[in-house]
Length: 226
Image (cartoon, rainbow, N blue to C red):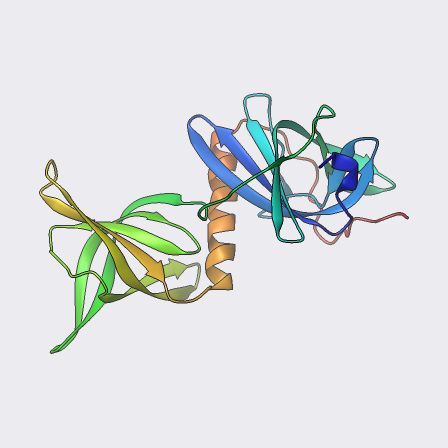
């Protein structure tokens, strides 16, 4: 697929790699011009994110159930027809079919309580949450648990609590820690969790990348032209 074939309104993802970390941002195509794509600006905490030359960025586009990847694209902030966009340049290359196997995993590395249903009632365990994605969570504990066991995880999100329920699908003993690593799959999709992960990704990127920001684009809606 060539870049000019991407329709307006297509959902895209920018996969940003910086200092050994990978962070993803979602956006939407507003306009395609001369082998470049203008997308809705990526905004974190009312500030438009800028990417410096140390970032390696991949463009991922899903169209009609198929996923395409353009690697090592250039992303810059531009102003076009009075609105602010992120402009993506692909150097004229074609997008390659991309087989995405799993959701982005965000490293957590924090102690959190999980709750497990037992015959005598809910049991609270303090575990080390390794990573979190929209589809599941991985945690480490010295307690040996059975697979297929249902767990509940509560995450503080600003002034509210995200309550997530999942099932243990993977178990691995870690001899060097004398502990078990568990992989859990969430029972259902949670849009608030997706927003939470996206916001945390943005905050992490802003801490790691020494970038500039344009004036806040809050309240501005990018224009499309036919």
